[in-house]
Length: 176
Ligand SMILES: [Zn+2]
Image (cartoon, rainbow, N blue to C red; front, side):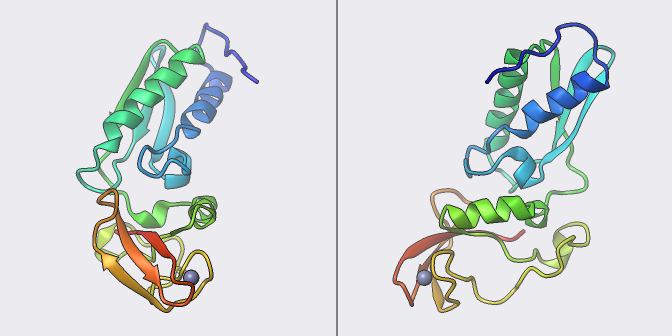
């Protein structure tokens, strides 16, 4: 189902429609997550007839941000938003604690261990104080008897682990 937004004006309905489109853009490195799941979509607002989307970069040096900005402009363009500016907000710095509960659920469903609570210096006070800091639990069987096999996975934001209980390798999204 494709709903085409009204071409004129930039009222509150337009902005919320744009926000819904922007929120659904997937992350290139963790494609099971949207930018909203990752917590990097900071703001969608109308400014002088233009749409301004503000995003915060994830892992430093993550080349995905350029791709996300391109995808945001393309999808919003298809939804009828011709004038789109993608802004990058560096402060406060993104932390893996910003990944939503829904995002964590999606990671586990994809066989990827979600990040533990970030180190205190990494950003604002964690919203989710219940995040564990112990061993990385296997996303398949839940065992905490796991071993890191490589500090970097397919992308720098992930590490490789192996579960000693079910013997399956899995990826862990690093806490920052
Ligand atoms: Zn396991």
